Length: 178
Image (cartoon, rainbow, N blue to C red):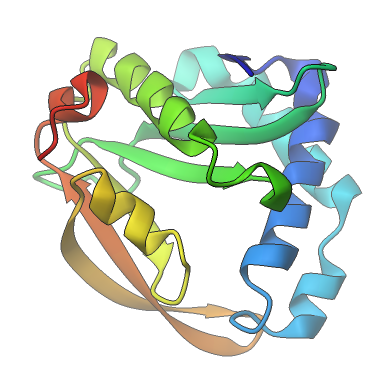
């Protein structure tokens, strides 16, 4: 598995992973009609925009490729979006196709992104996760502490979200989080 920085021409492949992973991970959590309405094309347009403004906005996106060069996962992050006083960086998204989950890819992507955030001066981080998302255990295993909760509306349903935080991400990079 190769982890590398995303390029503009990865937008469609990232969009496919994004949509497919939402459909498998959030089935039964997010309303079905919302998941059905997700579009590769709309998501691709969003990723083209994100990947076009990466350098000047401190947004970083990394992808994982399988042995034939197909993108099977990605992570994106940058400055924390609400100007939080404690957590300066944020993991915006981490998605891996279902058949590639539980193989250490999420850990590698997270470490790579966190290292880049750290080098850019973001030494603390949080990530928002739907409370019913199985990935909550992943973030806890990486040493994330539950720091905030909020409710968000997705597809007409009110869902609980949890923020996991790391006050010092160096432990995430070095793997000494216990």
